[in-house]
Picture 1 (cartoon, rainbow, N blue to C red):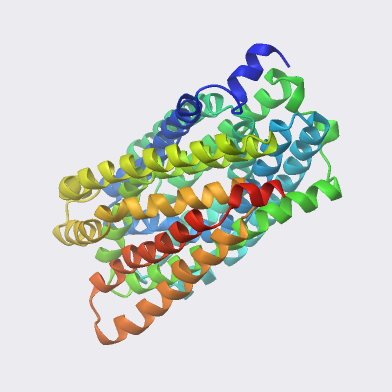
Picture 2 (picture 1 turned 60 degrees about the vertical axis):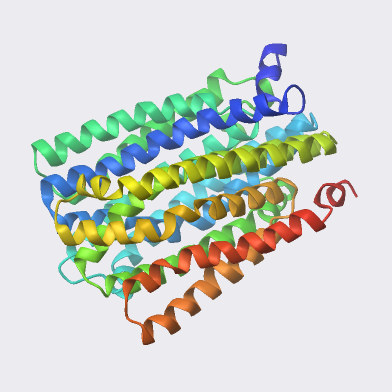
Length: 451
């Protein structure tokens, strides 16, 4: 590996703040473009096809995350393993981890394609999707899951690049696919009027393009340290066990939280298609509030993994504090902006007064609490990087799943008001933040790793 490449990807030396921000900024921009093209689906569909189609598309997040969250968690575990070996300069192990991760992604993508196509209609019915929305929702999700291999492999390839400190190239590839997705949406839906299935097809086609660009980078343009060779793609069982051991808690956590959010969505569905459309539109806007949260939590996972692998324990602690402060500050600034601008933002999706009212009510219940969500995700990212993925798994399972579902199930029965559902989020974010703060201050997570 050249000295220049090592300087740009290793996070074990140099200014802590600059390294974290230099890694997080491309992540932020990449997630911004991803959110823009996810939002473009809803904007174009809502304006050209109406509120039923908007409800079918914009409520997709929880169901999609339910299906793919487990495999994303395993991929995150793979990133921790790769980053740790890369930080320790154990390059043979890096190569094994990279190729085992790709083999796992291929198997997971095929499995998810079959499962998603077969189970989509059953899950939508179980969620209580309104009858007048169900046909279009079924078409959208079924086509979306036909392209499962594209977004699973894209996340695998991006995870590999990010684990070695390269967040710039995934940004470029994501910008390309975002532009393609928006243009295809406008062509298929706006010009040709093909319906919601075309929006799903545009998404998976653009995702295949970004996955191909990442793979091309890994095969032909990457340093030897983590370069991909197609003939080496296979399962190395000892390495696979490490990846699963690191990723299984995050995967299980993602699936359980997604299941809880599906239960939340099913309760929202009971208030009718206008509630589904309004809350779905807000969920697209909320994605922008999650940008600083996601980018800094991922940056912290990579930073902590590499520095603990290199035995830079004090540097890991300083980086953790810096990343948390940046993330919660940015998240809260975005939350305040959304709080005041939300009626205008919702109206961009659909001008129906009921849709705007539902989206505005949800936003003004939760957006001022984004700093709590940010803190929880940052601590979770830090602990995953330290090899303690079971701690965030148990904490989030307890509060974001059991407490959240129990609260909604009990309270809505006695107070059938949609605001009760919205308050489930800040309440459970608060509880998880308290537990994470106590653990972060009391537990010696750095030297626990050293032992």
